[in-house]
Amino acid sequence: MGVIHTASEDFEYQGYIISKGTYLIDNIWGQTRDTSVYQNPEEFDPTRFLDASGNLLPVTPDTRLDLLGFGHGRRICPGKDFAVNGIFIACA
Image (cartoon, rainbow, N blue to C red; front, side, top):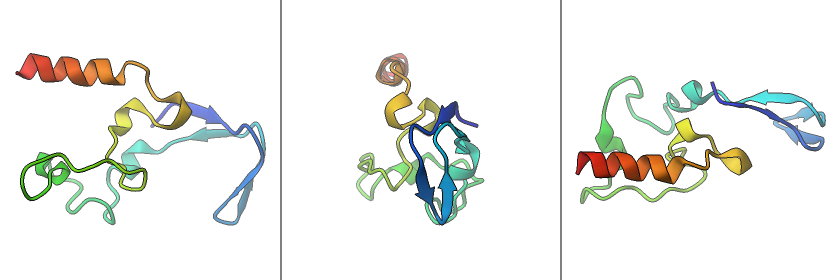
């Protein structure tokens, strides 16, 4: 589960009215197991993030390939780049 967010204004989502001040919890587990985005989501397959020539796929908002563990939107973890680069340096 993601960090709790609060709606800053009233809005409509898929026919539901979400009132200002409503607490919203992002279901990261469900997003990473979306069969319309990931084939065989229960299998460990790092190649799903690579294109045919072995390069990382470009990140677009609708693909959910943007390191969801760090959150997203305005409340994304400010240390995301530091952590990702630190892991790269440790592996290199």
